[in-house]
Image (cartoon, rainbow, N blue to C red):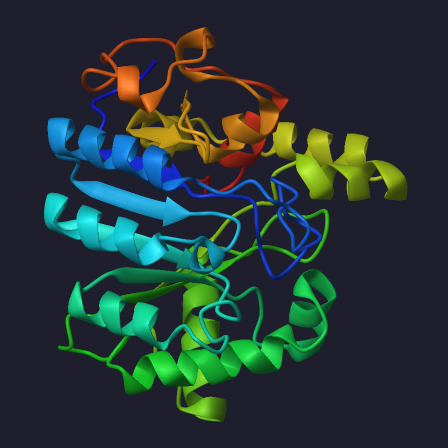
Length: 295
């Protein structure tokens, strides 16, 4: 059942400069689904009606969506915490300097995908050359003040396993990443979040092709941790797809499970989902409740 909703997640599209093996949305360079200015205005109007504690912009690669600067500029005054999820390489592309300046000016939290301090592991999951480009962008973010103590600019990392296994503990991963990145490259960041790969989209296709789907699902189910349920993000979050429809989470978007069981456009949503209303679930939800969970 849903609790008190305080977070709005906005998926601005499936266009991405990477085609990661673990992507539950099958985002990539050939996708054309991106949020229009009209839908952005519907999202902005909803954020004005409700005033969320957190607004989380995700994709695809949000940096590649036309009018992303407009969306960030309009949403920033409407929430105390605005987050932008980045794969680092898109943010580092030529012509994105103004976007980075806007993020600094609006104190946008940057949440960056960075699966490993090992270049081979990163490139095998995200594409050749991604690790080197990511290191360069992390350095640039540090130069702008991100991740630096006292700057007020938060830089967080997200790490997913390279295959069909569960991630290491968040605390252990944070110690290792902080030690390795600072010692080898002088890079600092605030926090790291480790999540199990979602058995959807491109990752599910890989699991099935490699014969790992059933063993992986069994592993997720056997690792069910009831302590994670109270903190699951779907209990406090409402997710908007690139075309403006509402879901309990980004994963339910991928699975086509709409909020409340019927498609509701953000323009028609008067307020927050009611506490106690059911949340759409499927077998993929085991990935959020395995081990330390996905909160």
